[in-house]
Image 1: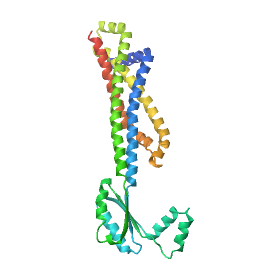
Image 2: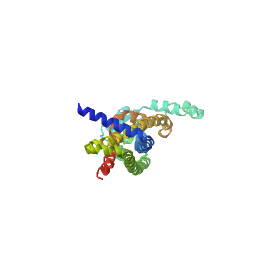
Image 3: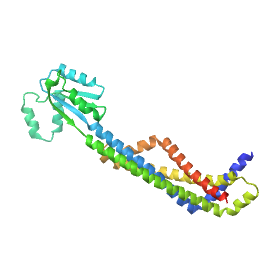
Length: 306
């Protein structure tokens, strides 16, 4: 029973410390929110850059165009051979009729081209094979594999759209952002430690007479420390809840605006933050709570040594 009484006294005392120095507490919460927002901005930018790399990788492919009179057996043999390679993610065979249909759809607004096609007695286009690799680094190998003599004679041309340079640039930007973000987080973490330390020191100063009475009546150092440590955890909790709300609202409104950067695809910010909310809450909340608890413990410890 005494444990619960002491626990309630500690909670009540820490809350009194919090409300008594409200403006200082709000300033501390603001700094902690900035630290958390810097972390989440870095996470959001990494999500965007990762999605951008995936979009670019999905655009990379090799399109093989076959001669119009290529037998179906040769086309199927070429597709089967490429699919059997472990480096190939997918290989879709497009028939000559389907290729002609797509060509007409692409040039529907150009009557001269459509008129020229209609005057021909037969389909001038051949079948094509669209090949996607599992990794962008595998495409040089696939281009060599297409020289297989079993179907190489029927290939009229190859079209390889290479985005490797762009992908590498995006990855370089991602590494630079991570480095800058890590430095920014370290700066905010240092500021947070100093602000929390000073906030607790001010709280100790305003409560110095009460602390002196507690020590005279035999209160342990832990009993004196814990209200201030709990006050720091209150600060961390408020900062965590406020920053979580800001991050969700920002991601919700930013997602539609960022579609243009990803060719109309979902930016994925809301999906990522909502899908991983408990992990982010556990890691960021636990780290912040540990940071402020240690700062509070150290601040009170310095006073108790006097």
